[in-house]
Image (cartoon, rainbow, N blue to C red; front, side, top):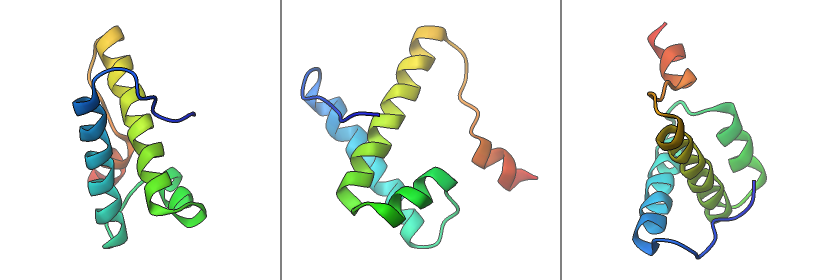
Length: 81
């Protein structure tokens, strides 16, 4: 996974980063998040983790738009069980 490039829509890019920052804030307050994000927060700084999560979210959104379908988070399924 690379960085988020500065090509494309700057508003969409900043919304992805703001959304990722919100998820990280909830994780810091004790919310249950994925093991990938927990490990990333342990290894990297807050801003690097926010950009990595925003990049991952952008890739998921792109795949859903291209292929169609609905997003099913494994974290949500685990909490419901």
